Length: 362
Ligand SMILES: Cc1ncc(COP(=O)(O)O)c(C=O)c1O
Image (cartoon, rainbow, N blue to C red):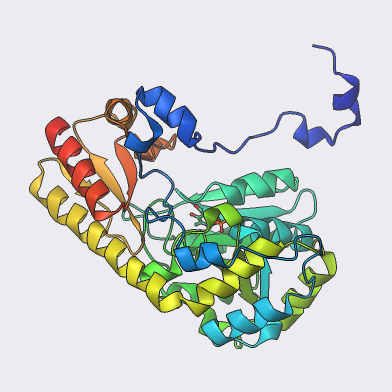
């Protein structure tokens, strides 16, 4: 097939892209299920099912929308510094943890460099690395989905720049221990520990930053704070990494509404963390219900979701059956997860419905 003029002008590795599979919109979901949008239960994206908090929504009124936001993020970084206990020089915010992943590629990855991830894991590491023209090396996690630290060490060479590790990992929900993190940090590559689900796990390795300048910790406001739609995330890292990223980031990467919502979240965080506790109770309810079901098991999780295995069902079939009942969960194309669905914690009522529907089918 002859190349179009656009293709000839494009960077060659992007002509046949590996696109990122995003979930369908609420309207598409409703149409797929043949139900009205308010009947749909969305437990497929680990979002906060309680919706935006009224105090955060209120912070979005009367903003100076005609002005550019602060490129130096002075208020944001001060607020995150108070929350995390890290100095402002170690903090940078962006449009979700996703933007942080992309910025790290800009800083560290040249075409042909290698980026490692440990599968099954969050797809954006692979996606952003491919866009940066890196070679992605995916190391399989072990049977319990633990990171194979020795296998990562074996891949270390001059061209290998970054290892991405989510903790809790998406979709398995398990944690990278401090001991594993230390072993990996000694290799010298940039070790990115993605703590997007930190508020659910309560576990962090950010205290290792003063000791290891190659450690980067990512966080997000999408899940626990319920503002996925505003795109707020941040990074904690050695001051040199942060200042190098400030040099190359888009100056206005956190918009005025996102800034206001971030500051309001920090102000009302006790209330929001109360909701996190309710979500963790829903995960417990799912665990107890699955313990009672035959040939159903799950990976012990530290996050707001449960990777659940249904031995007698193909996940793709079970997914379709659940869609017809208005329940949207997350299946995977990974060959290791053909019987697994990731189910996010919903509100107590949603969890009741999810469990009702599953027990009817299973
Ligand atoms: C492990 C992990 N990292 C990052 C993200 C993206 O977070 P954000 O919405 O802050 O970009 C997600 C979202 O699902 C995730 O699961």
